[in-house]
Image 1 (tube, rainbow, N blue to C red):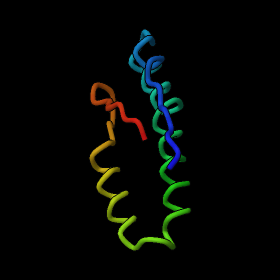
Image 2: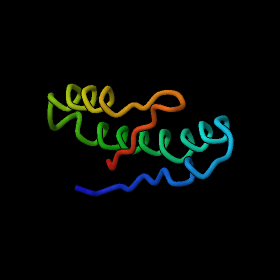
Image 3: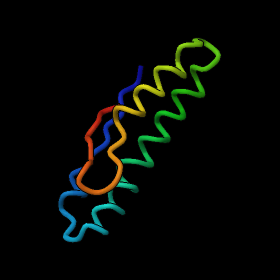
Image 4: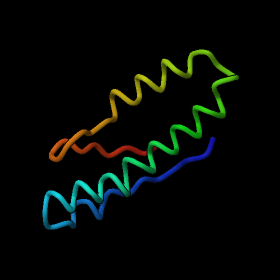
Amino acid sequence: LSMHRVDATEVFLRRSEEEADKAWENLVARPSERIVDKFYNSQVMKNDDVEHCLTTIGAASYGGGSGNRVHNMI
């Protein structure tokens, strides 16, 4: 398995909530989504349980709007 690091440091260095939300989207949310998509697409034929696992991970790791950011290493 390969390990991916998602660094949210820049999010907390932003001065405004809007800048922080944009940084979160660009530096954390989108890269994480690409990582999970790549994993899912490479595993879907190997294991029928992957969809359930990814749904569970997605529900647990989504930080949503400002103030609810979650830091995850995927």
